[in-house]
Length: 264
Ligand SMILES: C[S@@+](CC[C@H](N)C(=O)[O-])C[C@H]1O[C@@H](n2cnc3c(N)ncnc32)[C@H](O)[C@@H]1O
Image 1 (cartoon, helix red, strand yellow):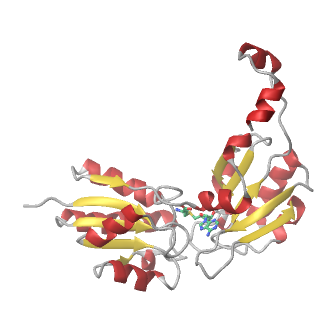
Image 2: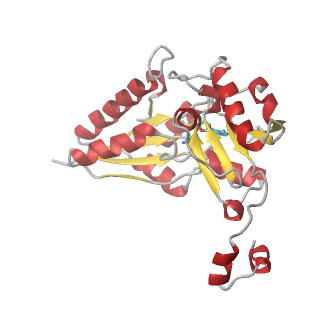
Image 3: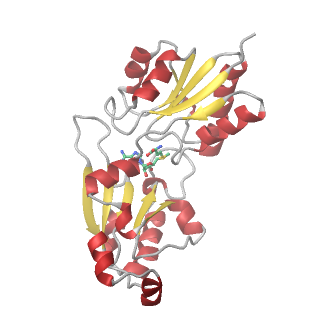
């Protein structure tokens, strides 16, 4: 009897253009494809790659906690694997970046003795680096989920780039963006305490389709609560300036300030 297996792949952010050759090959070769890709073009696209493709998006329900939906996704994927099928589960972006069920289902498959692995993909943060011209080598880059950032008082360095994900669903356990402003107001206040209320931040949405353009909206922090936020909005907070170097460490490493500036 053949044993089931699982591969998790991502489509990238932009429909049809970001998918890797590796991901496409696994989708085409699978006995069963299950996918979590938003957008009206997802169904026809996945069907054109593999006729077994079945959407898991209908499992979402705004009256249900996202965690419960994720549990159901894991179960649906595992049911196909347990049937002895070679299953390909497809998520948008990078399938392992801010995607709880992809990691959970790999863990579950391993626990049950099935081969399972993940392939990388193009994430929203990859698009942000390209669209905003940000290189994380220059000042470092910190990434946080918005609600987690607030409720756990995550520590960060304001002299380093900061990316905050899921700003459209702060404190919201369902799926769609919330009109409730208290989360985004809290985020703006927390950031203003370190950066000042006039610090310019960027509301960013990478174009999900080649016919669209990315939304790049610079605004001062004090206006953030008024910004139009979607479930795909991400916040980029540029560093508040250049961090002074530790001269003792520079000397120990045989470096001068000039070396550092020339290097970057
Ligand atoms: C559940 S996560 C999925 C991330 C995805 N797996 C990836 O690799 O980018 C959803 C969050 O990703 C970010 N995101 C998704 N699509 C985006 C886009 N087109 N532009 C900017 N950020 C996006 C937003 O912060 C959104 O709230």
